[in-house]
Length: 307
Image (cartoon, rainbow, N blue to C red; front, side, top):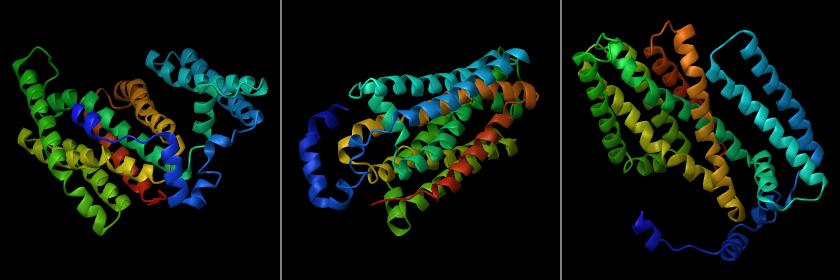
């Protein structure tokens, strides 16, 4: 990190604007290129607030009424908070208080460039799958492959330790595959390269259901490693081509919402799914994660990739 901080040249916002003006005058002068000057009317925020706030309240009521798992309140609370965020922005815009960071972020969230909106869907399904893997692989492998749910047993510890080894394997595979991704992208496209990698990851994650020999988990994690290499790089490479330079920092921050949101969703609904729908079998959470990653692979094909 120190090497990056010390050796990377950082340009001022004014310099970046000038580069953009010279290299892409058509985009610089477009609405998308100058999104900071395009504040949505307050009734747009108001309308969205009046949609999402009641939905969040209804979800919370249903969770309470049917005495569902408490962690599901994260979903209802998140929807409610998003609706309140829109209504609060409405009041600020009405009063002319449009220069604070809260209004800026809310406005930019609602005005994300097309490519970013498309990538947000890809990121959502991708990171939902990853969090399913990180949360449930140990319990899935120990019960489904090693045949034990006794956390105090030697066999459970053996399985948990082997999961740690396989996670190391996917990290190593990712480090090696990272060198091959630019080559694959050059001969296909960034979208195709990412779709291939995500498909490998989805198949690898879902294939754990078929594993009986613990050593075969290595092959499953090779697929995950291929996906991990691309996940850490390719979406950002695609994203940067679609963002106006003067909003790069804000949009990169907003883009990380779509890592956090699936994390919260996975933490809130996967436990409910495993207990109520999957009969306590954690392996199905991994299968669901694999399906989610394949969906992400399909969705990335529809992304508008701007060079």
